[in-house]
Structures are given as structure tokens and as C-alpha cells.
Length: 585
Image (cartoon, rainbow, N blue to C red; front, top):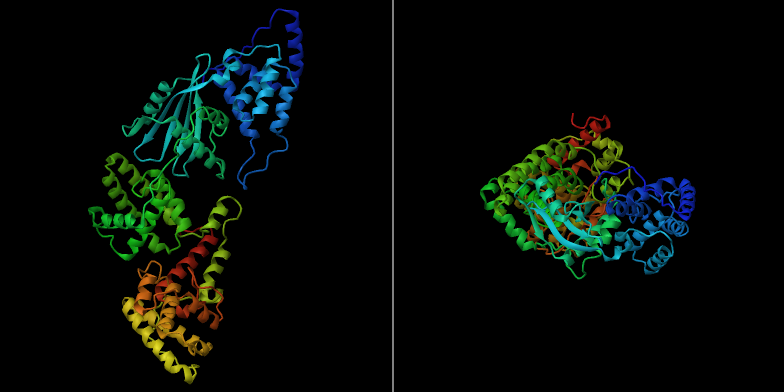
């Protein structure tokens, strides 16, 4: 910005001018701040007045997000302010009306404002009187190889030959929205040179951008910013929003907005195998790391530019400190595997894209920097999914330890059971026929054989023995509680698969991080369909209200293998430490 001079224009010498100045001074006493600021801005670079009016409009523009604050009753509405300008014959209000008319899309208001200005005695500066002849002379984009965002640089020429430049930064990591924008009283070439000097990076590229495409991209990014809460704010944004909107509106329509690739399941599967076969992927081809890699690709292909090969320090931070803690429901030891996998995957992606090593090292350093906080986050009580978003918006209070402990208690049948929870392995226990009616024993026996075979075939080592005991317990108690369920015509394979599915889901060994997919379970039992309908029958027989789904809870530690109980104990102790404000002790 140019230095703001403090002097005022000397008054004209004729008597009418002196009378008008006295009248203006009296009115100025009623609105000293705004009128004085306009008078000062008129003596500076034209951009001063344009920015001033844009800032006024930013205050008056109502929030578009439902969680945004209510407008202050002390701030007048746009219509009230315009009426005061129309009713106050001052040189400064005429200047305000001229800019407001240029910025407005309301044709009736524009005509009324220009008619009022024409009827007044004071002549406006040439650039302001002819503001409608302003044009954009150049459109360029300054982008970087890591693709976090781009600066859109628009050179502007006012009717009197004065130049200024608007710079609009569109950030992809936070939703392809305008994160910052500003205007400078300098030609676009000088501004671009300054941006290049600041970046000081050969991987920062300046290129011409189709004006229609620039308009489409900036407009959609402004729309996204307008509905984002909390909003991104800087010293100049959203104060210059109306100015940017006016300049962008001079560009032609019909352009294409941001277009990002969509990765198919087959392409993501191919990328997975390429990484695991690469030197960087050595040692990560196991069920746990494959599942975590699937989450990395989910994040990469569904976030930012939708490119799972794009990694920068910024999206590493978002992944580790927000996305994984908020999105991924898993125990801490499993999530602890992520940082090392991420380091290897970043090396693979940068090698695949030919990214210079200096950027690879910066991205890996970000993993190192954020890893301690990431490990703390995945060990502390936190809401996830929609609740996490509402908490971030301030709609929900942070979770308290009692809430967390009660959530854990549901899995084992109450707080007393949670407090007494042990982590020893389940014994290799025979089937208990107590309470099972004689007429259903043959059918239950068929299911038992299939359950035992399934546990021994589908699960490894100690998990197989513990799963078999837990499944036998569930089958025994279900048959005793509701023998009618075993007098119906359901195939024994469906019943056996349902028992294994319920116990497997409750222990995160089916459909979770254990590596056994539901399709593998259905294939083993030859059912070819979902177990959820039959599972509902068995849960109701045991008086369990939890519907079958992503979080199956059987309400007793009797059905939980030692690894699952160890996870619960760790979570229980973490909540207790959280209550003492010392989550890492």
C-alpha cells in the first residue's frame, strides 16, 4: 500500500463552496469516521476507496452458514446505509455510491445511484466517474508441484490508466476454497515477480490461465468459502471479497471450474500393489498395513485434489492431526503403525511423480513433527464422525471421561464388569448343553460342528481357540434362551456363519483390522448373503438391544478374546488418566 497522507484538499474559493463545506462539516460531525476515511481514500491510490467499500460490504453481508453468528443489531443493514448515502449530498457519499453501484448486481439500484450522483454539484475523479470501463488485462496462475493450492493473479486497469492487481489464493487442502485474497496498487508483472521471489522455489510455476476458467474457479471457490464454518479470515479476507467479486465478474463466462480425477476401485487396487511391490513398500504387505494403506488411499483420493499420490507437509498434518483421529475407529496399537507406513508411502509417491528430494524431506519431517501429537490424539477420548464435526463447530462440548467409560461399559455389560475386566486368554472350553432342549439338540449339533470348523479354518493360533470358545458360548446361550430359532427352517450354514460373524465383529476380527473380510466368511459357509437379519434374531433372544452393524456389542466379556479385552482395558485406563488431565502418563 502507498503511504497514507494526512492532508485534506484545500477548499474552493467561491462562496457557494464555502457554504457547502460548512454543511458537509456539520454532517461529517454526525458520521466522522466513515466520511473522513472516504475523503482520505480519495486522495490516495484508487484501490484505497475500493478496499474501503469492499470492507463495508463484508460487514453487512449476512452469514450463510447455519452456525454463523447472528448479525449485530448495532450494524445498520445495507438498505439503510444506502438510503443514508442517497439522502446526504456529500462528495464522499457520492464516491461511496459510485463504488457501490459498480459492485452491485442490482440494476435498479445502480441506475438510482448514478442518477443521484449525476444530479449533485461535485464532480468525481475521472477513474471513479468512469468505473464501469475498468477491465482485466492479464490472468495468471502461480502453482506449486505439491499442489496445496494456487494463487490466481488478475491484473486490472482503471479508466484513467491506473493499475492494480488482485491475488486470490485457492486452497485445496481445506476444500478448494478461497482461503486468502488481497489487492496491491501495482501492475501484475511486478506482483508476480514478488510472489516468485517470496516462494524462492524452482517448483513454483507461473502460467497464463484462460480468463473464463479463472472466473469459474474463483467463483466456485468463493461459494465454498461462504458456506464453510468456521470461516477462514485474514487481515484482507473476507474484507476484499466484494472487490474480488467485482474484478472476477469482468472475466468471460463459460469456463471450467476445478476438475479433479476420480480414481476407480481398480486403479486404487493397482496403486496398492505397485506400492507393496516397490522397494519403499517392502515389509508392509500384511493385513494390518493393507488396511491402513486403504485408509491412506481413501484420504488421498477423496480429499483435496483427489490425488492419492500427492503428499505435502500440509496434507500430512491434516491426515495425522484431524482426519485419522476423527474418521478411523480402531485401537491405538493398530493406529501406531500408520506413521512408518506413511513415510514409506510418501517416498514411493514422490519417486513416482519425480518430486525433488527437498520436498520429500520436508514432507517426511512433517510426519516426524506431528507423530507425537498424533499418538496422543489416538489415545485420548475423542468424538468421531459427525459428532467430531459438531464438537469442532462448538455445538457439542468435548467428551468427558464418564461418557467414554460408559461407552466402553456397553461392550462388557456395565461399569462393574469394565472395572473387573481381565486380559487373560479364554480357555479351550467344551460346548455347554445346559438348558438346550432335546428336540433342537441335533440341529444345534450341526451348527456346532460348522462353527468349530469355521473358527479353526478362518482364524489363526490363539485367536482360533478363543474364537471357538466364545462362539460356543454364544451358540449355547442363544439355543437355551430361544430354542424356537433353531426349530425354523434356516440352513445350519447360515446359523453357524451368523454366530461367527457376531463374535468376530464384537472382537474386531471380522470386517475390521484382523484381515478377515465378510465376503471370506460368507464364502466359507457358502451363504452368499448378509448375516444381519439372522443376527437380529439371536441378539433379541439374548436381550441385547444393540442392532447388528459396524459396532456389534454382545454385552459380556465372556464373548471377547484376550486381544479385544486388552484394547478395552487400555482404553479404560486412558479415560481414567484423561479424567486426571494426564492422558499420556
